[in-house]
Length: 95
Image (tube, rainbow, N blue to C red; front, side):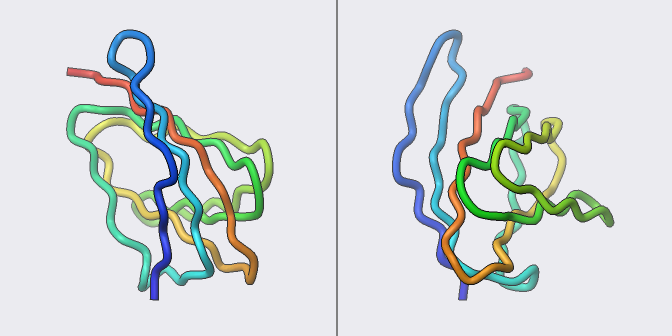
């Protein structure tokens, strides 16, 4: 069962949005598919460990790791650990 809680979303300069999420222990099968047609996603881990899946590639990310997901790119984020993980995402409009 996926436990993802968006704790805060804030719109910042030029329409970019920051989203802070807490992700409980999950698996790839439980992770929702994310697709942002008109926004690129800049992801940073601020606590714990998450796995970012883009196409057939998996990347394990820990505190301070960052990744960029281009707009219109399906991806999943899950936490395979026991403790909650926290991420911040900056969504930037591309179109």
